[in-house]
Amino acid sequence: FVLRLLYTTITGLGRFNVRSSSGTIIPEVIAAITETFHICMLSFTNTSTLLAIESSCDETSAAVYIGEELKSNVISSQMFHTKFGGIVPELASRAHVQHITAVVREALHEAGIGMERVDAVAVTQSPGLAGSLVVGTNFAKGLALRYSVPIVAVNHIEGHIYSAFIEHKEI
Image 1 (cartoon, rainbow, N blue to C red):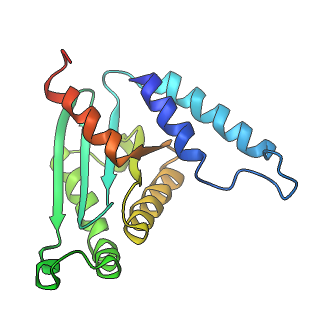
Image 2 (cartoon, rainbow, N blue to C red):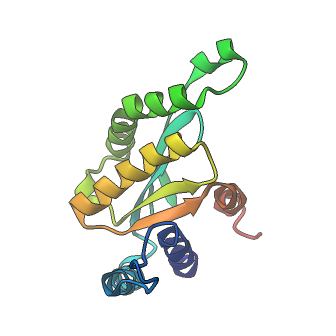
């Protein structure tokens, strides 16, 4: 679990501007990456609490895991796209903005915890609709900064693959 978390964290960081104008990696970024690894290695156990946020397309969702147990999973679906015959990216992004706070609050409430109990925030960072991903990523960044917890960038496709391990640990 920790190795996967570290890999996902570093690949997610690679999506952000971490280089100076001369092309060298900014020393503060190296320090932040080192600190992230340090936090991940020391903090994550089988009793760690993870808040996961997903907003890659037309559903806003949040889930809370404590250890290996799913405590809550809240999904807000955008059914209004059916009248257009498909997803309208700008409308999807706006709907995420409208629903993400309530979805995350409800996930935490159903899990019976507050943000102060969360050890890390995971968020879908790709692939998906750009505007929708920005909403989820920025919301997760805000939580991570406010509560001083690491943020874990998750690849949407890899998430589907790894979800098989949740119910089928023998795989």
